Image (cartoon, rainbow, N blue to C red; front, side, top):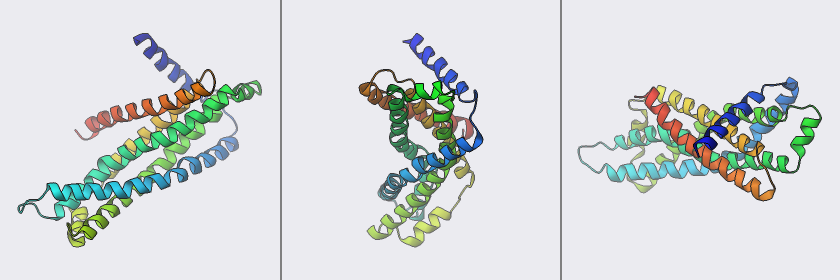
Length: 248
């Protein structure tokens, strides 16, 4: 088991090194990056928006019910909801959601190309297949995921405001005061740092598993599953590491 783990780690870093060997022309990568920006970012906005609004509403309602105390002002609900959404929900939970959507898509796309020998055809034509297929996805993920997470933060806070106001638990004035009170801009910077790390993990790990698919359609499904599982595990591990390094 340990030998297998070290083999996978070594093969992963060899794969990453190969992305920069014999690169293609800039215009080729530019077109691929533009395509991946739409595929990764725009394609995920629907699930991100739906998840963010309802999770923001749930966080607000749960915070309100758990802070039922005459000594705790109502605007504290806004503070808790804001910090929960910015620090943890949007950068971590949303990226876990994207690991399922983006990760499985990348792994299945590249895995299908591998088992149908399209990658072999690219290599025969002298194209750096790993760089051509993977590098644009990593660059696009690093560029678009921070914007997706910022949209998630905004929609989560809006969802909490709507839920609190419509339920009558937290008046709008108190909620708005809470999200403005003691706001630390560095929290957003920290969230975006985590987002960049998670975006790299999702795109690179998923591409790695897809690229090294061996077999047929069944193995493509297995590679897709591995991509989601390993991406999610590494996201949780690095969430703890980054929190410990930056906030502790």
